[in-house]
Image (cartoon, rainbow, N blue to C red):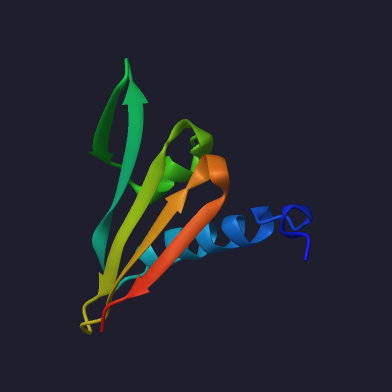
Length: 92
């Protein structure tokens, strides 16, 4: 009824932590990509999970976890830090 009164931050933080944890498992495959804007241009680069944890996530426009495991599961989880929005796609 009042969607603006419900904070999305706890779920966002929980899901972000779950993705970092999933990417650090022994059988994990994939990459983490961050998108940041400099001088009006959007740039993409790879980032390690440990480095992502040590940065201010709000510096990025978008963070994409392109993950999976050696067993064949693949998934993507896209985060929009400033809006505290995220979307998960499982691709078995």
